[in-house]
Structure formats: structure tokens, C-alpha cells
Length: 192
Ligand SMILES: Cc1cc2nc3c(=O)[nH]c(=O)nc-3n(C[C@H](O)[C@H](O)[C@H](O)COP(=O)(O)O)c2cc1C
Image (tube, rainbow, N blue to C red):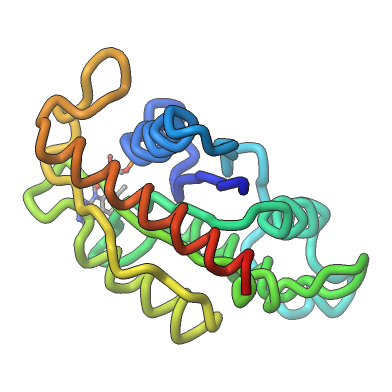
């Protein structure tokens, strides 16, 4: 069983990359094969219908759809931008949903594996509004199973230890339970 972790942030020092990397670390510590993917390596132009009509989805969208398809479960850590998800993450999901061909159907990729979501923000609400938006996009828009367990990490600028774990023991435990729930859901999906 293999899990993929990524964040809706491109910047090097992103809080949400830290959260996604911590998720991967927790999975690995529990004997689960886990990989972190960086959206900075999957640059795509903003979705444009004429561009799609002329050339189809960009190569990076095909590559990211293929990557998602390799894993039994997917974790996304999302920042909050103006009470919703960042354009980077929405654009990535939009392009992937348009992939067809090369043995891949982007829309199917979302329906055939479970997702877990969490978010980190320097503010008090810990990206909670972004999580609501992302849950709607994945579950309602893309037909994905999104597990109910999630973590909204507030005051995230000071939340991480040097080693990448969370300073607050209760938050670390809560986050570990999110990753465990994703692993359980992925196993169930695999078996069915
Ligand atoms: C355009 C923009 C809008 C933002 N809006 C919000 C917001 O609505 N709520 C919030 O908690 N933080 C907001 N922030 C601050 C982000 O949470 C902060 O930049 C965070 O570090 C981004 O995530 P990252 O560290 O993973 O890149 C916003 C930042 C930007 C650049």
C-alpha cells in the first residue's frame, strides 16, 4: 500500500509542505510506503479552454495525473488564500480532471482512491475555510472519497520543531490519526 503526499504551495519554506512532509514521515514510520511530491515540479499554465482545444492538457498535468494514479491514497495539505484554496491547487486539480488518453482518465483518478486533507496557516483558523472549499471541490466536483478526519493547524509559523514534528503533542497525535485513517481507507479501497 502506497500513499502520496503533496501541498498546494510552491514556495520552498511553505508551512503546508512541512505538514505534507510530516504526514509522509508518519506514514513511513508506520511501515507504509510514502512519497512527497512538490507542485513546484509540476508547473502548468492557468487553465484556458482554447489552449486545451489546441494542444490538450500540458505534459505536467499528464505527469501529475499519472503520479496520482500510482498511489492507493492521497494526502493534500492546503494553504488558505482569501478564504479558499490557492489558484495553484485549483489549477492543478482542474487540469488533472481534463486528462484523457495515454491510458489515463483524470476524472477517474479522483474516484478510485481516497483522499485526506489538512491545512496550515499562520492565522487563528488554521486554513479551516480552505479545507471546506477543498472538500467541496474533491467530493462534490470530482466525486472523490474524502475521509472525515482532517487537521486545521493554526499559528503554524511556530508550530513545527526543527525535526519537522509538531511541538504540541495533542496536535501531533491528531495529525497521526489523520494519516492512520487515510491508510485504513486506502487499504479498504484496495480490497474492494
Ligand atoms: C493571496 C493570499 C491570501 C491569503 N489569505 C489568507 C486567508 O484567507 N486566511 C489565512 O489564514 N491566511 C491567508 N494568507 C496567508 C497564508 O496562510 C500564508 O501565506 C501561508 O504561509 C501560506 O501557506 P504556505 O506557507 O504553505 O505557503 C493569505 C496569503 C496570500 C498570499
